[in-house]
Figure (tube, rainbow over the protein chains, first blue to last red):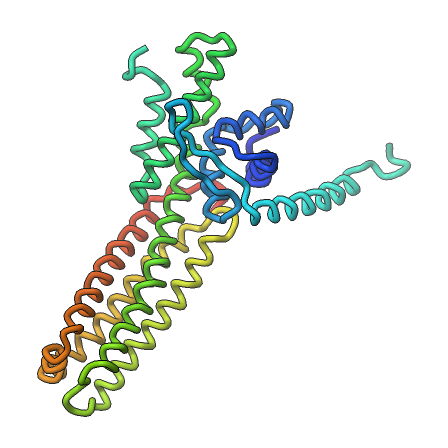
Length: 110
Length: 227
């Protein structure tokens, strides 16, 4: 999937992979790749500003900690983030259903 | 592989040079990027790549500086806008309350204020309230999800500058028009020195933050399709 197509949905995708627990930046990138079956063609560097953007909006909280002698910034989904994720899921379900209904070949044209 | 040719170090250095913003936040972002690239290199080493190729692949996957720096700059700029707005929301009402408290607890003017002085005092209060309200709206805007347009940060700088010029200007004129009464009041109430020091300190902090907001909003590179 092309980066331009993903960009508008990146914030929601990040919230989704944080739903099952806190992760640091690269673990989020790995989770995005794993859950998309490696089909997300996204510059990994764009995930870091997206995390800061989500943190600014209060949808995730980031904290520094030292793990194995290395500094790591770990992100956790906030209550507002869970609420936003639920909203984005509902919006996407509705949007994809509408687009699917329009794109589907009309009866008799197949 | 030396540090001079290490593509990861080169990328991090280039990002560091490209970004403008609050020092602590910028350092945090750069450290996080470096940490993430180290993870990526370790991942590719684990897949059996040699160190040079692992670093090259990690950098390629990361994306170019022109691709990533504008997005990081956008957040640095947004945070500076929030800082300036927060500073205004705290310092302007606090200054108003401090001066009002001084008037109420002290001896006040030795003579009733003229209509001009009363009008200037009223204008100072009105400007303070308007600036505080505008700053509160701008601060709330920085909490909205999604990219924050640069003009929000630029506007925090403009509002802060107008606030200091407006309240500072009216206050200065009031003191210049009534030097003796002002001097009497300042001498009669020791707390005046504390309030003046606090007001000047607030003004300096606000002006510095306003200058940063204006500078970082100008530094923010354009991201295609945004702003």
